[in-house]
Length: 205
Image (tube, rainbow, N blue to C red; front, side):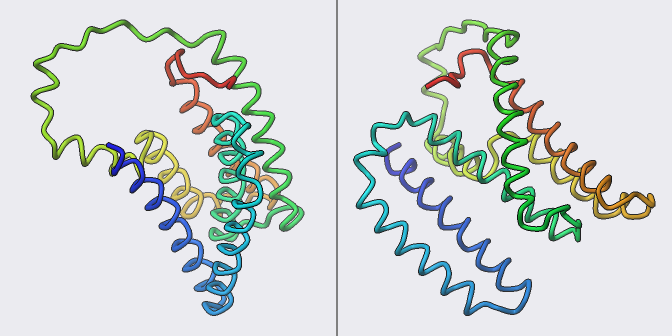
């Protein structure tokens, strides 16, 4: 399990870097610049990691995950919108706007979740069920969750992005309204995914 956990972390970050380099390089045929930027980013992260690993170790793990999740969601929404040709209202500054909006939504969702989420039913784990889990199943499950943590969220996002690409441009909407509808769809899917989480999920620490 330690091997698969370490593999999952390294694989996830490595694949993200590859996707970003390919996407940015292909958008303007600037592969050299994208690769150079990735190398510089690697060196900066290495230096910052060596310099700040002790202060960062005092920050709760969930707080770090929450902050990184907000950044990834804001940047991801912006980049997907750009790939669809969305005219973001203030250009690259829309990333800060998206980050602020997602921050507000996250705060509201935490309050709603803590108040209304249902407690998961208590179930007893039988010893014989553990024996039926094959090594292959135990190995493949973390690999699957490496890319898909919430299947309904992933499928819903793909459908919404596809509809935005195929249908919405033909509805004669204004640019601002088009962008707003696209963001509201993604924000709604993310909100539903959060509210489906069981009550034992701790958002405070």
